[in-house]
Length: 259
Image (cartoon, rainbow, N blue to C red; front, side, top):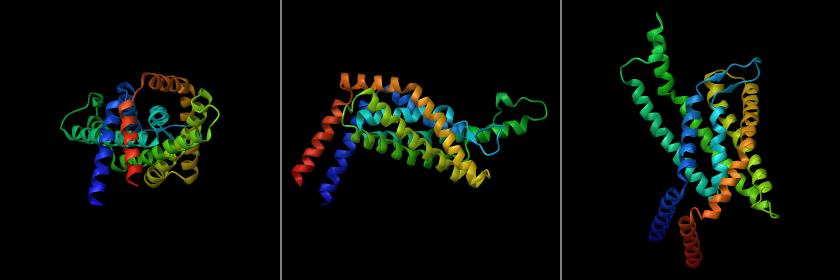
């Protein structure tokens, strides 16, 4: 039994390596950057004219992470998309650590040169770029949960669309619904674990933030869904990930034969 378990893990690791090698570089880079940027921008609350509505600046880039996951789920499947999401989270945590180390290096930020406020501003900039543990923990948890929700709901909806599952209408439907679900979960988990506990947001503000953030980010997804669909079609036409798919099929066949 141990031998079979070890062999299974070896196959999983090999498939994961092939997946990383198969990923288009531009989309992967932008995906990782969006995850890093939205965690940094989550430190800034947006000033709004109504007290019951609250948003953070992370919505500027978080939609791209979900657009990327929808593309990856459509082409590689939900398991692969989730593995890439976890990899992006790990890289984000690594660079957050490096940013923290950089913020603790003695020195002065260029923007802190304001007569009489240098020390205060410099400390504020160090704390912002160095990160706050509860903001990082909350955003990491929120994105991890929402990635699973987005990827597997996208796949599940796609399984229900039998007429033309590879058509543009099917892509748009599965992407928009899964993004709405994922974005709502992402915003709500972050609002409840961070904004409610540490910033004093009310439950109404948390829910309204989750809903309005979902709408704002979904509009961006709608705007660029055509590009996502075109990219997925090109990946399929060019055979992107052929080695990864072959490895997954071989593993499934061997598991079936073993049973």
